Image 1 (spheres, rainbow, N blue to C red):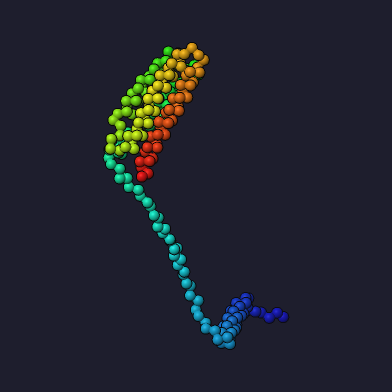
Image 2 (image 1 turned 120 degrees about the vertical axis):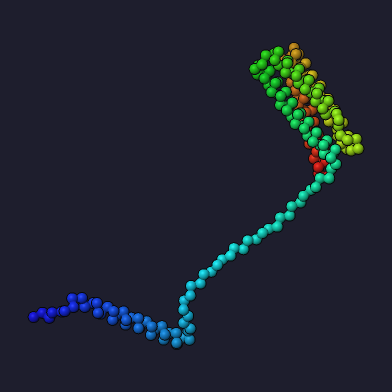
Length: 203
C-alpha cells in the first residue's frame, strides 16, 4: 500500500536547509583562513579613480620685426610695387595679343591696333615710373630707381619694335626677337622691384 505524502513538493523544505548549510560552511571557512593567516577582513569599498589629464601648454616665442622705415620711404615702396603689378599685366596683354596674331584669331588691322596701344601704354608707364621717384635723401633708392628707369625705357622700345616686327615683310623673326627682348626686360624690371622691396624690409 502506497504511503501518501501530504507535501507534493518536498524540495521546498530541503533546498533552504542546503543553502543555509552552504552559507554557514563558507562563513566558517573564511573566518578560519583569515585567523590562521592574520588577515584583516576589510569591507570592499568601490573607489572611483579620477584621471586628470595633464595638459602641457607650450610657450611659443614669436619674433616680431617692427618696421621703422620713414613714411616717404614706405610710400615709395608701395608705388613701385603697384608699378610691378602694372608691368605684369602689360606682359600678359602683349603675350595674348601676339598669340592671337600667330593663331590668326584677329585680323592684321586688329593686331596693329593692339600693338599700337601697347606702345601708348608703355610710354605712359615710363612717365609713371620716372616721376616722382624716391626721396632724394635715400641714396640707395635713388641708385636703384635709375636702373628701373633704364629698364622701363627698354620696355617701351621693345613695344615699338614689336609693332615694327608685325609690319615687317619677314616671316615673323623680327617680331619674335622683339617679344623675347620685351619679356626679358619686363622680367628684369619685376625682379628689380622685388629686390628693392626685399632689401629695404629685411634691414
